Amino acid sequence: MLFPDYRPRRLRQNEQFRRMIRETKLSVDDLILPLFAISGKNVKNPISSMPGHYQMSVNNIIKEATRAKDLGIPAIMLFGIPDKKDPLGAQAHAKNGIVQRTVKELKNKAPDVAVITDVCLCQYTDHGHCGIVRDGAIDNDTSLEILAKTALSHAQAGADMVAPSDMMDGRVAEIRETLDENGFSGVPIMSYAAKYCSAFYGPFRQAAESSPKFGDRRTYQMDPANSQEAIREVTMDVEEGADIIMVKPALPYLDIIAQVREEIDLPIAAYNVSGEYSMIKAAEKMGWLDGKRAMMEMLISIKRAGADMILTYFAIEAAEELG
Image 1 (cartoon, rainbow, N blue to C red):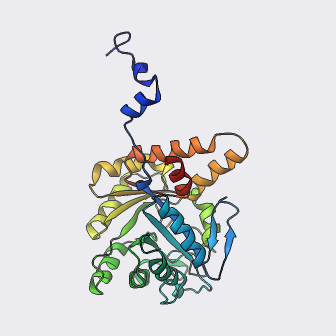
Image 2: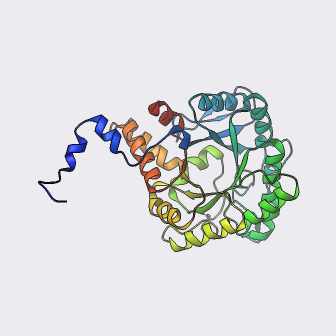
Image 3: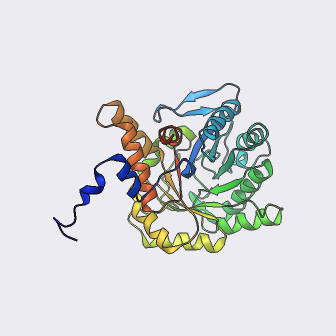
């Protein structure tokens, strides 16, 4: 097909034609809203690096989750900021921990909201790492039991889905076995399967108060230069029992999302992370770009790459834009 016989612009002449031939459709059904829970009453602490987002007490989490539901957003991802931290992250699996209390209240006051809980130790350990530290290094196998206990405590509180983000080897199998043995075989696992050691997590670490106190996370999160390794990580988690596979971050790893889409037939999630959100908000504030158009272009690119669902801090804004 060559010009002048073929003229691609013919089908770009008006919005009706553009809608008719649009190859990728973004829907409110694709969105998951991350929220940060903290103790207290009527608490709404602004997160300075993430304009429009807050650390919120349970009553405000319920309000925001209900707002999301009313806009058609099917699920939230819940993170917790505990009252106290220790070397073993005991509050991560405490029966009355911040996530466990929040889940119970959400399921009581807003039962139609699907609640996914992040399973990790970084917010709960005083050293800020995602696993247990022994002799200055992350002890993978010791961490597995605590991660599984944490996932179980979330399920017992009423979580609809658990999402391990720690990147310890073998944690999906450990969590699946623990859930099954305790009567929660129906609770799915969304695995952060290909989670890269990224500079784009900075604002989240302020929000979740989870920056490591020493070193970094390169010994367990993936090297940004690797793509074949991502397929191995994903394959392992599928074989261990993951129900949904996640790639994180999204924008710098669209090629990874596309490769994973070709390799597996499970649903794929992509995390449009805090740095991706904040850089658009900062550029919009400076008048350098149209924030809404940039937001929608970014989200469409993630969907086009092959993601079935997108965890994004833009969820509310995108839902409002989608109508």
